[in-house]
Length: 320
Ligand SMILES: NC(=O)c1ccc[n+]([C@@H]2O[C@H](COP(=O)([O-])OP(=O)(O)OC[C@H]3O[C@@H](n4cnc5c(N)ncnc54)[C@H](OP(=O)(O)O)[C@@H]3O)[C@@H](O)[C@H]2O)c1
Image 1 (cartoon, rainbow, N blue to C red):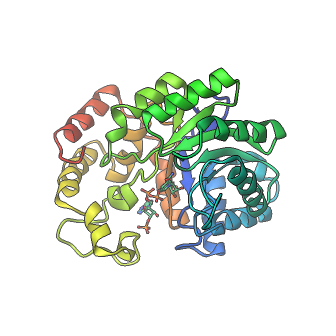
Image 2 (spheres, protein in one colour; image 1 turned 45 degrees about the vertical axis):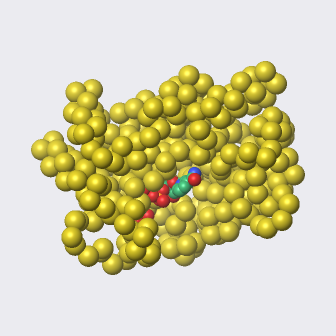
């Protein structure tokens, strides 16, 4: 496994990370522990979760698994999130000091740890000044409860605003951004990637496999394979991923990858890692075998020419 610095920070994260929004919703504690321990054994150190994933279950399963694997906590980068709808009523979500101070205690307890490596603001809160959020996060960093802070689902102007606010108020800076990004969803290329480059944030793309579509296991006109993520979703959500536009792109990418001795899955990871701003690709995995395939994908380093060839295939596609 290779490691990259997370943005301008000193934190080194594995090029392949582990997303865990399926812990609790689709995996029980034993299955989650199996995948987590396999990740550690493969050298994957970045574990991404959130308080709202199955309302705390994902964090809880990670805490239990790390407790069983004693001595491993230190080698893992635990990245969690706050700010999405935890409960109804005032301060049940968002970026207020009150919500943050309560949320962090819940996450620390469920994760069975006394510090969070990367605490991410899950989505912007238009009703709370970013200065209030950053000051509360800065206090957590000074208290040692949090080591680094990041954002998620921020627009480019919000990244710039937060960076300037932190600089002028002398507060901890966001070191990471977590937007959706894959070969099928590329809108961050115009504004967000340049903003992250300018302000020194590393990107942790979510849905890097487009929920599994970029594994190649879904085929045009074929039934959705049983037991897969998309098989559990309503028809409209399936259609948003399994549509003619996406299949047209996949049908160009898959032969290109094959001609280069690789699979579509490997290309999905290697293409992301060809952009230096991408620090770690945090794909979810249903079992240790999937994880091992994903970890191995980072062995393929695309040349600049190969990256340009793939981009040209994508540029001509309707998916952008
Ligand atoms: N910040 C945010 O707002 C936000 C939003 C969503 C997600 N996230 C984070 O991003 C992470 C990644 O997103 P994601 O897991 O939802 O989507 P994803 O990484 O695009 O897709 C993961 C799914 O693809 C399938 N898969 C993975 N590796 C495979 C392999 N080698 N062979 C075959 N199938 C494979 C698995 O599903 P099946 O086996 O069931 O097909 C797996 O659950 C999440 O876990 C979460 O931590 C963040």
